[in-house]
Length: 176
Image (cartoon, rainbow, N blue to C red):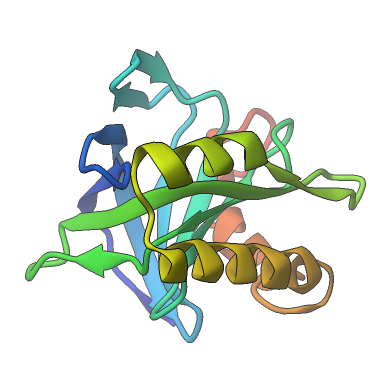
């Protein structure tokens, strides 16, 4: 595990290039699963629909060569929220992470229930943004794989808890 701390701009776009969401995270480190970032509760998020503040502290995993990013939330958020997107890309100095959101999301609640979210948005955007058929097929394939992987594969089983533990000091009643 390699660790270092620096600010990273997370830049999430829609397929037409418009802004989906953008915020500043902190680079926690990297391991065999990819790069881990943290975002504190209350962090400002910009989007084409306006801005908001993040409701939960979380760590985000940007894997290498995969069509997803995963957010692992501190209580009381969902255990994990995984965005199906294009392969995460980094700028040359590692200060900007860019992905294109492909709408489909896999959510796993703390009770272990997992479900797919935003299928209606995916269907709509395939037409309005003109997703090529291979992009739609890859997004669907990734979503199906994730629905199984969140039940049995790392980093979804326990690895994420180690990274989340590095930032639990921001949660009430946790270590200082």
